[in-house]
Length: 452
Image 1 (cartoon, rainbow, N blue to C red):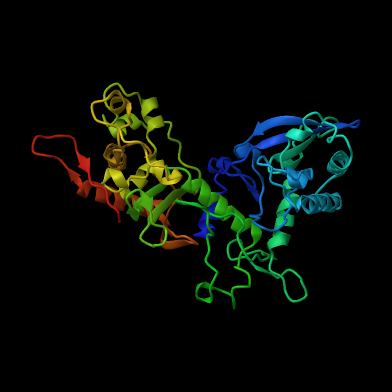
Image 2: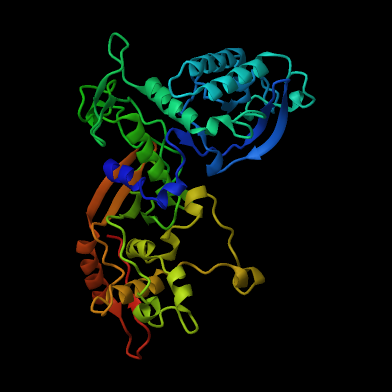
């Protein structure tokens, strides 16, 4: 499964939804950008968030773990007071570790002379009186995220932490921090179970994965009963840093996209999800593309799908509306509307009840009805005898399906399906045809969903 997740990161379209290796899409925005010139530095207020401003990540908790050229103000600037007036007694130590990381970067082989010069300017800016004398210095709080930018030279106008060379440095640095070491403190190297390359092996995957509640590890190595391929829980997990991080980033991107995620079973007591059981089952699925898809320019969605989209639907509109990959997931959607995969499953906030007959009820969104899209999928799969090249001739493509039970301390893989899409589609076609029901009055066909 990890191998398939890493392969999916190479998909050109899907990769646009991923942060760089070793980076994380934080919920907290970058609050300040330090603008540095040869004559001084100033604080510029900002509100930079989202995937474009993903930042270095190590999964730090209680330890001191600085990030390069973008970090909280207690690290980057030595600010000790947060927005509630609480003083961080370790702010001076955190700032010292941040400066030590900058010193290490100046000697890093991944960085060129221009970046080294920019780092020297950053060190001068945070060590001198330039920022302390800034009119907005008192507004900076210890938990505010800070980034750096130079105003002159070849790197002018660029956020330094986003430079490809800085990202390459961070991959090597993060790998060094979480690598397993022997009795002589040397990194243990070995063949990665995913990419097969001989690299330093890591003890943990920094990025947790999230299906229902808080992020948790994608592996379970807290007891010898869960150990695989090593002697005890203090060893490595047979993965290199790049593959482990990529698998987690792809997992989270799939889990956050309802086109690739279906809740099959949710163990609830009222509105509360029980996370201490393995009854919860969540499916993630995707199509791994093989060779480039055949051109669909001559394929008519309208002729293949008939009137599935209703009267007045144009061919262009139909092709944009139908998501073949997500329609496969509707086969797993529970028939009970209350068990469907809704936004409330992610944020754990129940939606307010709306009384029938009110204006709010009239404007409320209708419950999901996967039957319509299943009818479209059935129509698409039943045009195999069309004279022109069929859209679903996907040479070398794979269908991947993983069933997970998210628990309190881990994410357990319950089932794994990975097979050629060409082998699977005939079974999907046969299933849809077998579960099509027309009533005695000739009403449109209805498809029965399955939770298995």
